[in-house]
Image 1 (cartoon, helix red, strand yellow):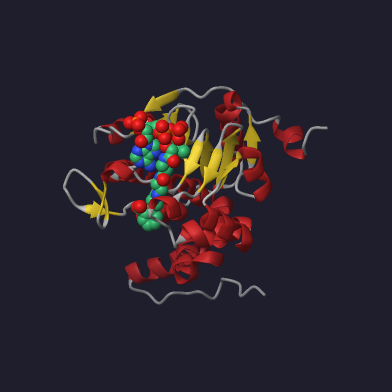
Image 2 (cartoon, rainbow, N blue to C red):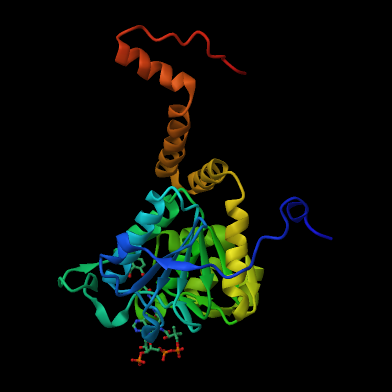
Length: 293
Ligand code: S0N
């Protein structure tokens, strides 16, 4: 039987999107990432484009992803962002070990950095859903990137896991603590301590991914989820993301949720009464606003 959503709206379309490049960000000469928006739809797509390295990220890759996420955040026509990897073999294999130096990953400027941590925060803070579309390997820092996305759609060839303890790295931030929220403490310790890899079906059973589909269905299924998200209230989604983050993120999470409350208050008559009174040099009159239970 069709779902209640489908009875009202019909099934969300799985039709291909007409992707266009985004000139405002393309002018930054993106080399490591492809950035597109679906014509006439509120969907942006960021594709890590280093397939020869299983889409491992170097500092430049992370900087480019960050530019694209910032653009998607600032563009009011965008309501959902897809993060994916080029090709069928990998979503992302984590930090590029060939440019790893003492103190982090070394970019063209010779400076070692761990800028993927800032990117994780940016994805968490982005007030729009971010959907990971995973084909092939999502391992190491690449596995953490999919975990910090709001939803994950996986192809049946996807492989998930942490490799850090094998290659001399670890993520003691979201990479471990958020993972424990997703899969539970025992499983998180297993994933990190044994550094095993898990197939798509097992990852789904563990609660790491939302849905597994045949590889050829990965983009259509992801688009259908995005389109269904776009049919819902953007403010409701924003507040829900903030609240779900706040339960984990302590004061930083409260700041995000508090900022959203301020944004809503600024849109209200009561909020504007204070501003208008100040600008016209009169006392504000808040007496007409109800003190609801
Ligand atoms: C992904 C794997 C399993 C794929 O195996 P497969 O299909 O057999 O392919 P390969 O022949 O192994 O690889 C193809 C080519 O791609 C290169 N390559 C793959 N992954 C990487 C990588 N991560 N870095 C550099 N090169 C990579 C191969 O070398 C090969 O190249 P060619 O063809 O020239 O020989 C398999 O490739 C694999 O296991 N890869 C390594 C996975 C890994 O260990 N990743 C790093 C894990 N650590 C992190 O990600 C750091 C965590 C992190 O980001 C972080 C956390 C907290 C705080 C800071 C940080 C931070 O580092 O910023």
